[in-house]
Image 1 (cartoon, rainbow, N blue to C red):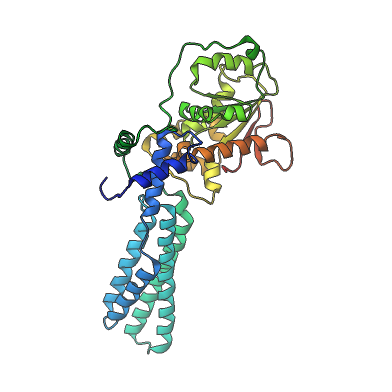
Image 2: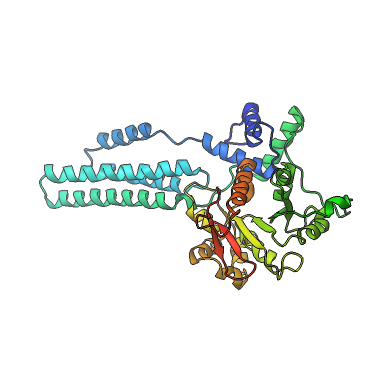
Length: 390
C-alpha cells in the first residue's frame, strides 16, 4: 500500500499479538483494526526537541522583521491544530500536537511579558505586544480545548478493506493459512441432534450478542465452557441449536442475561429487543445486564477508542423507539445522533473476554451496595448497566 511500509515480521507479530500467541481465535475485522492501530503507532510525530529547535531558530533568525515571526507562529499553530483533528493520527499523536500548541502559547506569553518590561511602549510596540499576547492566548486556548475533546473525535482507517484483503490473501498464499482467524459465521438451519440428557438441564447465564461474528468469537474461544453459560446472537446464531437452547434457558427462573454489543443504534436497541420480543424474554422477570458497549461508557472512559461516524448511523439514532431514548441521557443521545459509533471488533479478543468475565463476576450480587452496575427501571424485568467497559 502506498505510504505504508509493512514487512513479514510486522504482519506475523500482529497475528501473534492479537491471538495471544496463537491461543485465541479472532475475526478478520479485529485483525484489520489491530493492524490499523499498529500502523498509526509507527507514524511518529516529529520529536518535540526537533520542532522546538526549528521554531526557535526561525523566530530568532527573522526577529529583525516584525511580521515574519508572527507568520511563522501562525503556520506552526495551524499545522499543530490540524494534526489534533486528523483522522489519520492516533490519539497519542493528537495529544502531542495539542500540547505543542500549549507550549507555543506559553512561549509567546513569556515573550510578551518580557517584551512589555524591556521596550518603550510606543503605539507601535503596544500593537506588537498585544498581538503577541493574543496569539499566545489563542494557541494556549486551542491546545487546552483540543486536549479535552480529542478522545471523542472520529477516525478513519489508514487502509481500505480491499487493501487489507489483498494483504491477508498474499500472506496466506506465502505463509499458509492463519490457524486462529475465523471464517464468516455459517448459517446452519438444520437442527443439531442433542442428547436428551443434556437438554434436561438449563443454564444460569446467557450471553446475547448483537452480531453473529461476536457470538462465533466467544464460542470458538470456549467462553461458554469456561464460564458455564449459553451464547447466542440476537440474529439467531448458532441456528442449529438456537431453539433447543432457548427451551433449556426458559426452564430457569433465576436466569441472568448479559448483553454485549456495538455502540451504535442497532446495538443500543439489543436490550430493548430482548425485553419486548416474544421470541426472547417478553413478560419475563429475569435480570438483564447490559455489559456494553454504551455511549455512557465511551464518554466516561479515559482511554481512546476507535470512533467512527456515518450519516446512516445518525438516521438510525433518530429513529430509536421512545422507550430507548428515555433510558439515555441527553449527552448520550447527542453522541448517537451525531452519527458516531464504536464496534466491538475494534477490541482484541482478550479485551472482550476480560470485560465480559468482569461483568459476569460483578453481577453475582445485583443488590449489593458496592455493585458496579447501575439499575435502570424499578419493576419486573429490570435492566442493569455496567458503568465501565474494562
